[in-house]
Length: 472
Image (cartoon, rainbow, N blue to C red; front, side):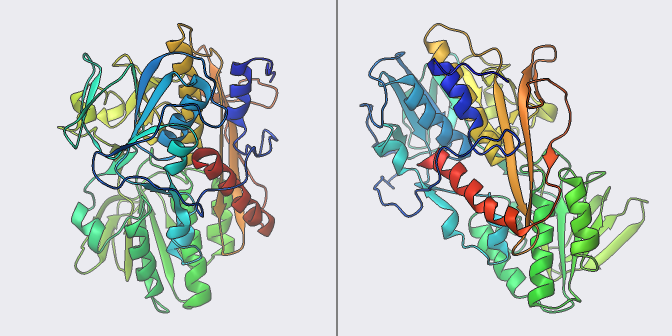
């Protein structure tokens, strides 16, 4: 794969790949996070902070325009930062996000076992303002007017845009006989890191030898394909080493097979955690009683099974935030993906295939790439580059490249990894896995050939680099 680094767009493509791609052999550009840094930002609803003056090497020239970004997670923070870096001082970027910090779901499975704290996963959005001149609006999105090119916010204010970027993440269905209140109170899915992660950690910590931990996995697509299997592993490791070998982890997977790192997790379930993890695929009709914690389901053979659990961790089906009937994404005509649950995009720019001028990145988009934090960071850079070009009366890069990489802890001291480099295929208009030479093969991601302590140490470097690239 050949890159031209003599121009800005060539450098951008290198940077898109540079967030720690194992298979690509690229090393981190940054190795620090801002989790221990200070900084002030407004907490009051509707308060606007920031400046549009050049900061941190932002060029004084560039296209003129207003870009509004909705959502301050991995994708939203990345696109806001790189729009300013690549767009120049004349490009006004406003980030709409009600929270002052982002809590990373990446590495949050270690918080479920108490190996990390939830606070260690929090990253301030203040650098986007102080270092890059992003204007912050402390509010949430209420509606979009695609014709008038405006958005209405929760504080009743209205913002005009030339380009709108949506990075809203996902919302979770009521499922298995449970409600949102059940998830909040007694049956936390903890698939968005935060208070539910702490609640699940407390429940796991309260288990005793012989107790059963039951978790469910929804049909794909869902956020972080290896994540549920990773959680099963670290919980199993915690229980057998801290509570007793008679504990069980029952995994009820609604998919026909393991969705990521099949070789690694098969070994982890049958060898590393043999006798503790009971993995069952092809499960249907899961029903959970929130009062008794009784779980019933149809196994692969169609036979009704029932188990009593001490802790139930239901990971429900999810969808793009706002895509349900009556939601703002649905109302704007953007929920045009499979079953109206996602937003279809053109992967050259992440512009909606249904509504011009609106780009959707991260977990909410339907683009063929996995729904994961590293991927959101990559999509954000492709999107930022495309918007700068479009506002400069140019066309998006016709051959974008993206890298997906993640580590999965298997025990308290060992981990595995998964990685792939994706290249645009003009024949199918999709991103496909490519070899290091740039040949499109449409293959599968590469997983580590061993579960090791070295991978566990490298996982921390990967995480710090990715979060530093996004929030520092």
